[in-house]
Image (cartoon, rainbow over all chains, first blue to last red; front, side, top):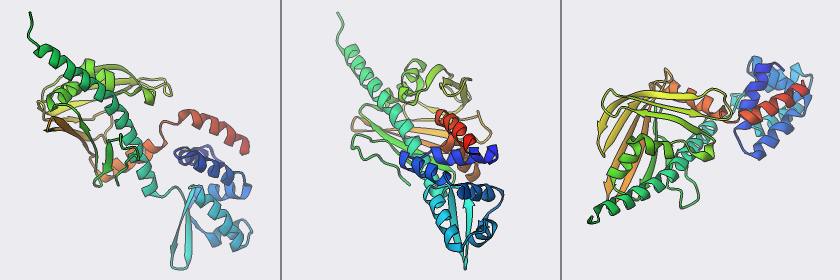
Length: 132
Length: 164
């Protein structure tokens, strides 16, 4: 695999849970599936085209694509009678993960901010007390 | 889509509200003037803006709190050698109510609006980001999703090279 393709796949692998991570590794453990990823890195392809390219039955290729899809490395879309495969994760899923990460960052900030606001409140109270 | 933690204590909500906008909301137990103070005083910002749990350390924080004034935050993350600077200018400064600033470290940076709304001694904070285009936010999501995993990245890179 070309280095940028490896990077691309890694980008998609590392952003999810351990389960997804394991699924990605399992998916990549097979030479045909790595070949499919490499092929899809060049251009989108139908399952039929992939089956031809790798000299496999349609059923066999469907299984491989299924494993890649499960791991989130490939997405497929059926238009008419043709199922087209391409690299990448479903965009909405990626967006949800980003929003959640963004939320976690702010939640961590705000937890710290809570403490500071409490401190400022105490300070105000102390300052409001009559001084001798 | 809202992303909410199951934990009832986690009050922070985040959402993509349109093609170009995201929001984060949170309620604080304190008056708006104190929350605003914590957002506009460098010594206080230094204590909360870069959470330890995210592995970031805050190197410096400069604020010129007036319309047109500059704002500049510099962080360090162990995964990247170089410090990262975030900077822009204040567009609106309404004490205890509203702050608007630009994020100019990238061409596609958002405009951030923070509002402080006090009610019954509590303050609702809304952080709103408006990106210049749908593509700008989509790109931020695409690159942000891959960021922050540098360590695993290096390890996996090695592993996969072995698979070639």
